[in-house]
Image (cartoon, rainbow, N blue to C red):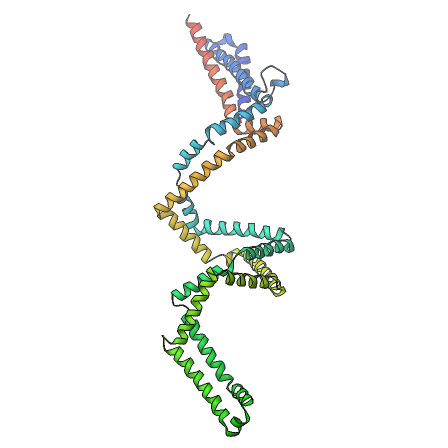
Length: 401
């Protein structure tokens, strides 16, 4: 466009020179000369005006030229103030965000598996992989294991166990455990009948062994135990069953409310945490977790597909259809953006201002001229044509007089 504008100016100069030589051949040539003369003046004037914005015309230090390079810092501050006053004020951000359905837009993004699922999955996987591979595994493992151990040491286990046990008893979920314990006891007795009989035989006196009563005594004891366990298993209100339930309820209550019981559980927990076997288990757990996570993030298409993509798509459809959910998400997005503008608006515009100030004059000139230069050359072209028309009009008026 600069070449076109310059060629047009040169063409007007050539027309002026030619018509100046042959003006007497015909009256119409005077009109052409007047048009070319005024067009040449208009084109030169607009060339000077456009050039003066960015540099000194012909390299001459004419006052009030090279306006943008000379006022670079002031332009940077003005741009920053303009951005802050017109875009980053809480009121402007709130009004703008009120007209944007952020939730629906996010839902459309997530519901499309070609964009939402793949881009989020690949982006998250790449970020996690970069972080894991850039950090020292030993130091990272030490931090992770130390954090986990610290949380376990601060966490009081007894109330949680008591609440879980109490909830299980209230829902009747403890009964299968009791019944399984009774069956295991019966199986243990059956598997060790010979040992029990031998023990009774050894501890019986000589008279019992001589009369054979020790064997009957052992069989009676075993039969009684089998009968007791069978009745406990079959009869819902059996005294032994109630005794076990009462014991469990007492244990659940003491785990929550009894300081002595809670202290015993905490002491046992500290012993477990201090045991070298726990440290080895924690090391193995960390290594398995780290290896599995690295495998997952390095293969996001297989590991994070399927359920992950389905969950994202389901969330996207919910954001598109659920008006109440949209209202909540949009309100959160609006408040977040207003908060960002309030807290960081000044820092954002300061970043713009300082960035422009750090540019050298040539960089500022090239970037602004590159952004609006085409329109500036149209100013030169229009100035040439408008100047010519004005010159032609003045010549017509002068001839009429």
